[in-house]
Image 1: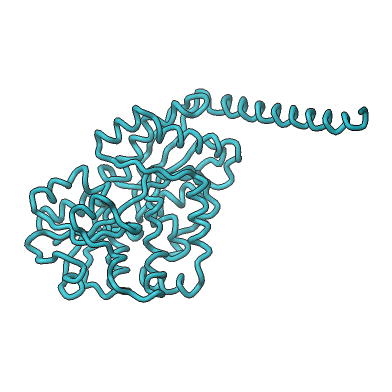
Image 2 (image 1 turned 90 degrees about the vertical axis):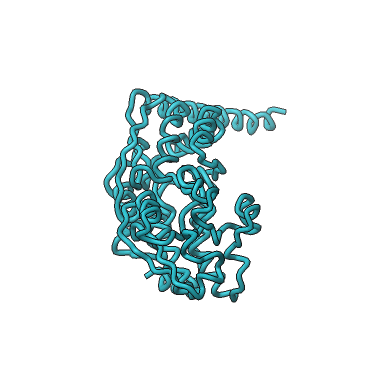
Length: 346
């Protein structure tokens, strides 16, 4: 009996050591965050969907972080979130005292975009989670005469765009180059809010590539009044339930060959992590885990959900672990498809 007891004792001792180490790490995390201000860098213009989501998150996530730090949002718009992503990667503390919100395009920019401007390796960020899985919509003023994907294949539509990696600049450009649509893109608007104002003024005829969750809270009444027509959606099959109910055609239901579909999926699948939150690289694992669990708890927080509902901000979250897995999968795409997608985005 004595020989058999030795491995049991050793196992119990090891478990006790592990439990003690976990308790030490938890206590260290509590002590680290207590009384701190945590900088929340938001790579978007004021008033747009990314800013709205990020501010609602900032109101609630702090109470789920041990030590209850004060979350301090800071807007840093520029180059479709590339300015913020570069700051997170190179300049902000790597100790868990900062995190950020960036456009989905900024996550894949080093893979399929401008590597000179995206001075970071997205795979090295810490992935906290995403608040929503997005549906992209394309719409036109009723006087533009565009009612379907087929229409925009043959008829020019002048659309408003924003920063280089913004979806309302990238996505119509991609569709022009890969599918042959006839979007004429007016770039330079600071963000989606200003592009929408340009539609209202008649400076442009519509927008393609805006997230429905950004469009609906402020501009959904345009659809209800019949001022604009949502003529296309881009959403994982079988499509967005609300857009399906409205009879809006999904891009993936249009005919295309396998290579074309593969290149488009590389670009559009980023919408599965539609509202991403990340940390700088090399944040200690225990502190990244703390932020992930705080994010997960916030996504179930009744007060957070009530505020999101009041703001008409759909919540369909993705965990940090799944977010990381999806990013790793995108970065493992075959070179030939990456080259085709890159060419379409130039």
